[in-house]
Length: 248
Image (cartoon, rainbow, N blue to C red; front, side, top):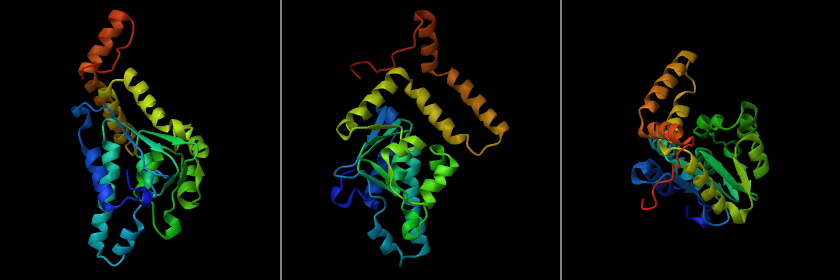
């Protein structure tokens, strides 16, 4: 994100650009991971408040359409089948927290701080509340959304909001290292299928969860990656190196 003068605020234009990127079938393009960072002093200051102010005199339909644009952005990140990693530094506020926590992994610089500020301005973190439970337990969820104060990177890591905390100078390198470590030892196809499953299971009955899981288990056995993984282990007593060939 590259609008540092406005702390990378989520303007309609920026939201549309991000949605377009995350909606792409990146794995089909040979992209196995996507890292999200913000230019300037901060990761993201959240929604464009000037835009929201203008919508206060707009119709209910216009507000619904604008809300749907944000829904599309978060859904695109959640459903992106490539590995997604957020690199957070400085302030990460409201919708910016949503961007980060919709990703598979969040790496925070030591100076990062997180704030779900919606109730401070009479707003509701409605969209974020649909997927934040994937990361934090109920008591911490309520603390974050109902008692809005900045949370340090270390505290965010302690409650599960963040996966790793690193010195600011090492943030970009830590993101690349994490992506490389995961993708060297894990099948991108398996990662994609696991991500789909994790989105599908919550809220279902036990019978439905087991039925969905059984289907996913059976379908995975027929993939080329599963056949390669089993064949490699039986022949060589090791798991495959999942890195693509050097000429890819």
